[in-house]
Image: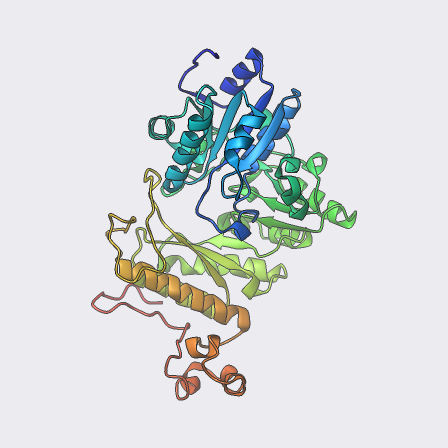
Length: 437
């Protein structure tokens, strides 16, 4: 049996020590996170960390197998037949900790003598809590630098890998910002950037997982490389999962033109601050528009259920509609909370015991803002000046729907009692209005 090392080790030190002792087979587990099966190969949910670890282990001739507990399989026999020397379980958000705990327990119930290591976001943010809560043997804190240099091993996805037409890339690690609601600077405290990703290419559609791509000191060199790769038809399109730092775009608008030329799709910028900062957000949107982006392609990240209250978020949303851009809403959950019982289909109000509700917010406001954002985005995408559930759900005839489609809100309201105007803030009653614009 392996020697028990420290309960959690930074970086790849622990894994390397285990490699020295000899590993032949490592089982990689993606827990049964609460996502639809049709979404699990989406760019936001693919277990890229496990894919990179597999590539790293295979360099040492170690056999790897990925098990995704959302699959409908006889996992008991798969575990025993593979007979691993080590089980590695990934974690994502802290509020999905129970699924990680269940995966560790499942492994130990079947193979009680095989050690289990947990890594990923939850493990890196709260290593002590992760070990205590999940009952694992080891916690892998932070990234494994040796694995980080490698392209993901899509082959372990078996038949699924053939259906994935994108490649996840990191051109940077870490972030120079220290936003209070974000844990990146804790997980990846050292910022580093690459000059090139050419040697990593295995697919034509690139999804950058960078937390702050534009802060890379080599960003212009990297973007010119992407432009060249596109001209050589080695890549088709790019996307930045975390969006772009608007402050950097304001200082260097030429970067937006390079992003457009490299074919970065659906650019996003964040608006975390108060409504009074609207002039800076408008300037950032204009930088992207001047580079060739259509406003409706642009989305604004907005964190809600946080410090700014509902009415102020509504003012910000209405401004975004005026500018013709969409919204990517992000409901805040504390970084140390291990559960999230929010139910979007709940028939009665939920409490802070069921999910985190900021003192500035109510359950009603959380749900109302999400509904408003959905209707807002539908209007932006379809070029409409109002939203109607009756029209969307085909409760009126197609002829009527087409007749009303191009009307403005005031005119449509005469025919559709549920017409909703995205151009104005929808304040919650009994709450004072915020700074107007």
